[in-house]
Length: 357
Image (cartoon, rainbow, N blue to C red; front, side, top):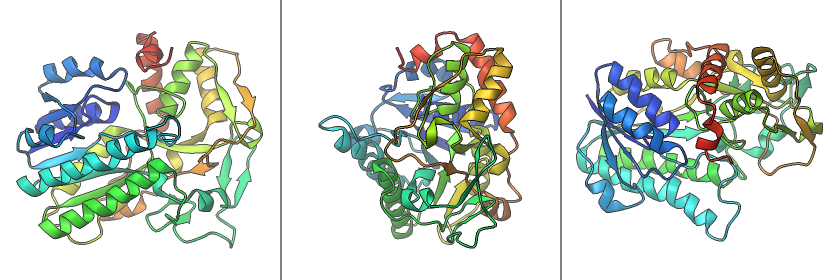
């Protein structure tokens, strides 16, 4: 099987490429190298055996020149929930990156009858609905009050499921991903090629480019090690907001299972994340970092609200587990954090390479 990965020099794209190569797949990848740090991965991927193409999938002629493959993983996107808010053309650029480029990939899949994996986002879910979920506070983290009779459809102690509300607002980023899901599934149905949509929570691991608005686990570990400023934003500045993490290699295992299922019908949207077992608050992450690195400097508190922030988001992967041969995340959050920590120790300038000065 031959597979093409867009955004191959990003963290997720490069991790998927390396996993697929180890599984014996032929891997091609395209990247425009505009993200700070992405150039670092190009030579490493080439040496590993990836057929690399320097191109921009926002350009139809660049996509038309890509080699024929059996499957495409669309891992190229602006993943920041704050994307599109600042700058005179920022919103239009976000739509170009996350939606218009997908149209070119869908036309490619139509032309070559290639299957498509859409890596969507947990941020397609309604911010108002998430913000109004009943929470309890255990002193270190917000937890869903799953004993409440006020829980809406699509959420439980296992996390957020596919049928949770996607009513606006979901953020500009979330809107582009939600629109992309619909468009991709329509293309697959109209032209007979398979499409899988996986709504991913936070993907994390060694080599992730860390910034405060994306790659938060990598950013926090690196910042703590380097004694860089860290802030708890919102909710009284206590750092109790919670996210879950999934390693890209666990995602890669799922994609290979989905690739073996023929056709384009049936349920094709899944929530994919680390689940409650791989979830922690920023406060808990800070405690882990301080223990791991023997540091004592603490984050500052900033109680001001920030647009699109939510107190809790954990992905429910039980549907994927039930439907795909008991697939379940195998890499624990403590393993992910230790992997990031070792990488941070070996790469003292990682935050600068990630674009933070």
